[in-house]
Image (cartoon, rainbow, N blue to C red; front, side):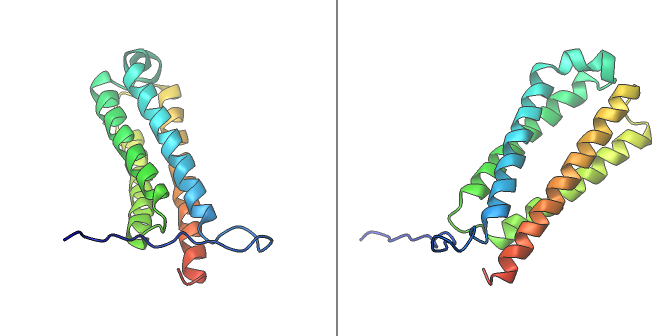
Length: 148
């Protein structure tokens, strides 16, 4: 006896009708995933170099880097689904919103001995994550509006 598995078909439109309803969400998830992976590699490979100029201790940059690589892998997997599960896309939006809040808290709480450039680095990260959350939310809304 064999089990039969199926996956839902990706949202497709005939030629000339514009992009598929999932195009925005899928694209943003992929870009978010690649940029998160790149940032994770920078934190892991250059963590020791970031301590002085940014004030980001190696004890923080290594776990952040590992977490970012895990997050990047998850984003890539979600973007690769034939039909992006609504719960997973909602989790991505929430995760990015929480990441933005965490970066702001770490920046302004004094928990890290950030320098001026380190503060700018963290605030830039918070802004980027907020933009991803907004774009992914817009992509989710587009899917909901299309009834998917």
